[in-house]
Amino acid sequence: MAAQRLGTLLVSVPGLSGTTYPPGTTVTVRGRGATVDGYVNGDWLPLTWWEFSDGLREDIADR
Image (cartoon, rainbow, N blue to C red):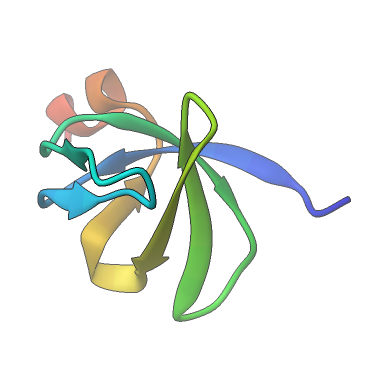
């Protein structure tokens, strides 16, 4: 199983279910590189490097 980490969406991203998740949503991220798999409550979001940031929303606010 690939390593998982938490991330935060930087832009709105649609999930496979059709739900669009707003910036600031916490996602579980799997994979490395330019594209990764993101998940919100089991909903799959194919993410590219510019759509999310590693770390939680609170961590990003402190930067």
